[in-house]
Amino acid sequence: MLDIMPCLYDVLLNDLGNDWHIEFNDLNGIGYDLDIERSIIMLNNFGLRPDCALKSPYFRPQIILHLVEALRMTRHVEWLEGMLERYDPQTIILIGRVCVADTTVQKIKFAWESKIDGDTSLWKHILCGEHTDIATAFESSLEKYLTASMDLEQAQSKAMAVAFNQWFSNNERVNDCDHDTLDLVDGMIADYARFEGRRLEKNAITCLTFIPGQDQSYLDRYLQEDILKNPYYSLVSDPINHIHFTQILSDMNTVRVGGLVFSDRDLAARFIVSEDIQIH
Image 1 (cartoon, rainbow, N blue to C red):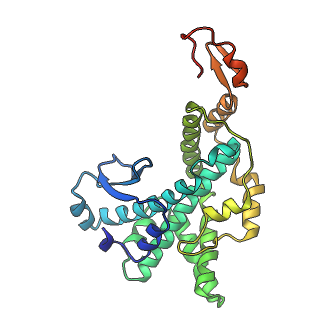
Image 2 (cartoon, rainbow, N blue to C red):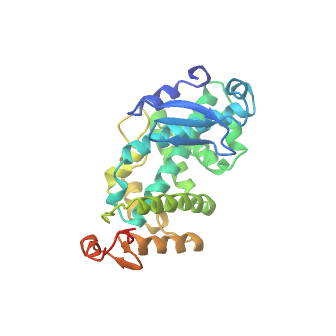
Image 3 (cartoon, rainbow, N blue to C red):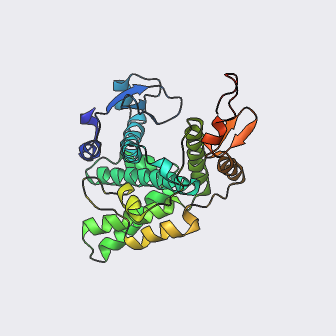
């Protein structure tokens, strides 16, 4: 697997804490899946043998880009393990968006660096896909910053920030992300998670947007503060998602005993009068 990836693969892989390994399977159109308990990153082989898929000029770029996204999302999953219960629902929505926007930015930067190294296939694939606007925003802003005599590292960081912000401009992207996040919160409620209702801190935004191999974010402090304060980044405007979100607000931190709903588990326990009535 290592020989199909540009050098940044090692940086992304080394950014993970656990001993993750990669497997292939036919995922029916899904680019990747994560088996958290077994530390497995599952990549879509598009119904082909992995060696055949990786030799295909059509499937290879997709597999590599999905792996880049999967590695970065795995890092987010590790960092957020056991932490989501600290936050209120609106904050969890924001965290989900930041994570997905960041994985997209990392994928685009990876494809651009691969192009500079002589492999244009990843960049061409992105320019024909759903993230064309983000890639274009990254490239054009990078050229602008370099033209202004900014050094490459700083120019890349600023271009990544522009690309990150561009992710939020597409309602369909945001709505799809929110749908997945709301399903995740539903699962946490089903597992009896107790949410503390905290708001997100700036250092969390920093940690979720670290540059691979470096100890700093590509988002400056002004954008980080805006992300925390501006409803643009966290407001749920899609009607269907908003209904789902409202239902979650109703269900969070409640206990059902038979047909009764309690916000206090100790009080709920007093109403368990037989083995036929269970706490939900």
